[in-house]
Amino acid sequence: MRRSEINACITQAKELFNSISFRLPDWGHFSPADWEANPDLAKWCRSHQMGWDVTDYGEGDFARRGLILFCLRNGILRQPGEVPYAEKIMIVGEDQECPLHYHKVKMEDIIVRGGGNLVIELYNLAADGSLDTKTDVHVRTDGKLNILPAGGKVVLQPGQSVTLPRTLVHRFYGETGKGPVIVGEVSQVNDDLADNFFFDCDARFSKIEEDATPIHPLWNELAA
Image (cartoon, one colour):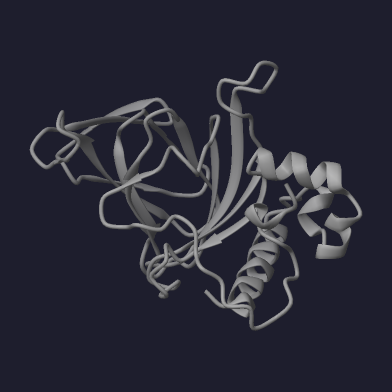
């Protein structure tokens, strides 16, 4: 992705967050110079994978397959004294896909906080690690049990949520004609370096072409 594209994504996300009065922590607005002036905080946020994250999954077509994320809080797996939970806020564009994947460690609730509707497609994971296209999926939306065929979809409107157990395979995208979706995530500890398992995507993080100055660094660009 181009840095100018990332800057535009972050600007759009901040406007959408403001539209529902969702406020980021102070460091969500830090410039590169602000982070340089706060090295301990930068090290903390990087080690906890907290802050801005914009990805096109290495495919160069952000509008089709991409995601804007901001991680507000997170622990570190198997580290004493760390919190056992995480929270994110995300922007999913209309018809913009987060590709099929699952997590081995993380259970999560996906909540639509505002904007359009979120479509989530679901499959079980077969014993050999492949996509199970035959067995029914059991999933709860706001506590209500749904039994869906493999590849079945739930559509979440603002205020609604789904609980995704470990190894439940899922992809999601904004419903056509409804506009961008503001999506919350409340989960166990999140590790985007080791706990994302994709089926048709090789790059969780994007290679960046530096055609502009960053307005806000991504979390993995902060000083360690």
